[in-house]
Length: 319
Length: 281
Image 1 (cartoon, one colour):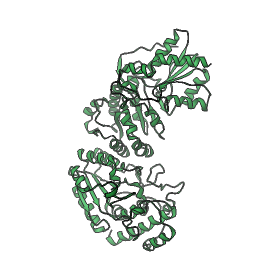
Image 2: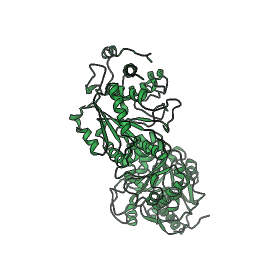
Image 3: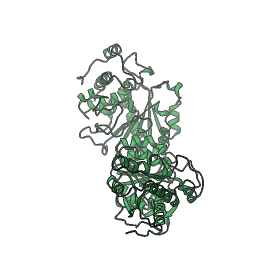
Image 4: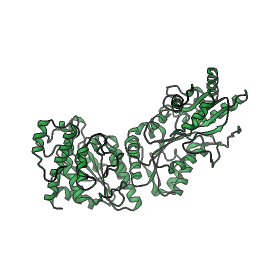
């Protein structure tokens, strides 16, 4: 019942996006792509080579890029815009709000380098507020896949969703542990990776791997802590979350995002509305990041497996 | 359509816009009156477009985007009078449960509107995307976008300017509503955009000057010149020297009429200058 997920080899989630984008374009001629001078970083080069007439280099001009994408969507194309998470959200929030979401345009916003783990570039680029920004927009679907394979699948899924999608992924190579084709990955459904009777960790993005390691560490102490991957942050799988709240009072959330407005708030919202539980959060504590190696940052800002274990211990003490 | 007929429609459209704004006790009369003639020229004499059934994608027809969405009262009147929706609906402007939102929107599915505008600087980029899409799918029709000169303070306008020239978006005809007025005053005092024609030329656009922006013969001539310049590798910008508040003597050229409705006595003076030329809504 409790599989041992193994690292199939560290891979960048952004590379999963690049591969998924090419596949999506092969399957559907309406798929086009736009980049704001980051086609290399977003792994869009293969797409640009394979489909030069469907690729639009926008330069370092993200606001215009969002608008051009909205225009392409108006006539029936499925545009993917690709840039770093802070330029893909905060910088162009009003453009996404008015030209994409309020206008109901079928635009996919692909955001790489989300969270702390982009590393050495530091806090200017370490976007930790994007989930909150994007999930606040009516009509926006927010996806946060956990590894390379899942990012590829999420990209393919995004192309098939009718309407705006925010697709969040990261920079560094991280453990790739989900299968290439994964029937348990369904948009809008919480993905149960590990069952457990003593508690539950809801995690998203790169931190899902850390949550698995935390659960395995606790297993050695005789605790069975479930790990549920919330790859679809909006629309949230209320039923899939409530099921766990009913089963256990030990509830932890873990994410590479500010403590405000992210997964912790999403789960807490459900816990206050449907099934009351205390929720222990692992997230960045309302502060900016800094330069460093990804793992160093996860340790310093309290997001690694060890901190998830501590959060489970706090939750256990409250029971 | 002959010019006298266009003038007659434009006179009614001005009257419509003023009545709409007065009835709603809110709105933007100055720009709506100033751009009315260009809207009428586009929809009644220049663009190849199909009001019914309305196609949100605009594929197979010319498309117009109003980027300076706040001046929509007269645009809505033109859309209604050219057959996009019933003219009686103009009476719902800015009211609860209306399709005629304070700024153009698609959520309520008002025929004629293809993207929400109002937060400034965004419509030109969207128009560029539509134009690129038309090229990609082999649709020979053109995209028209109006922007404001106050709106041209926005950085996104100049991002769009760079992009359209770089990508040779030559099926795009933009029009700047150059009335030299914005909310806080004269554009030359708030944030000077002059020399505007030179700026667009320097950005790689074909630039046409529409000096008599309330003269239909001149408007149609310049629009035709723009069409002739299209398809040659450059986007086109028409700088239209409009008069804010055109048609109501005390509103003309006065920036204070950017965004307020007339009082009852002002309305009486204004509407007397805009007699009905067609059936009122």
